[in-house]
Image (tube, rainbow, N blue to C red; front, top):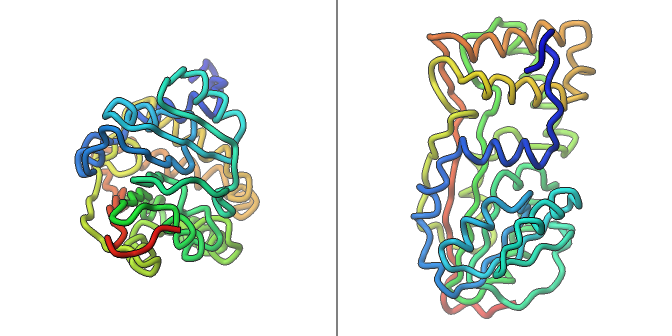
Length: 263
């Protein structure tokens, strides 16, 4: 934070790099089958931090994201066994069948997730796996004022109706992957120092939440002249000793049935 309460300018890629350190990705990665010599699609790969982690475990990674700035950041990592492409995740180009699909914090943005997952599943080899991670109930933190809770709930409901984002996607992942014809092998709630923690947040975590609020221009519109009160009340909640998060980061690991023909 700069003097006067102004946010330091940080690129989206830099924000994602910082957020990566707050997630317990080791717990999720340890749940995967062996990656040695396997080919993995990283869908919604962002700046490539998770692709780098997958490569570190022996995988060849093809990362796809719709944001060219993030793809450039991923390419700049210089990973020898990774390739990054700009692409539409809801109209995924054909690729040879892969051993696994990784997708984190992306499913909630997809308008037709059931159809998209079926398309993704068709890119798996028989017995291949799919791992999805998503936040559930992002704004469910306490204690906040009743008006703050109501305005945020209204924003969450409107985003779902408009098809922009599903803030409660985490709890729905299992049903969606089963609907895509996959067999769920495991589920985890991942510890998260930014999105699902109790007690007072670290200063840089509060700064990241403030930056998130600033990016939500439609929340500002939805709250009108109450926006700053809502933002400040929520940020104040995250600083409190009695702060409690009812949100959670959900991880689902599923696999293709071994007798299913590949797409």
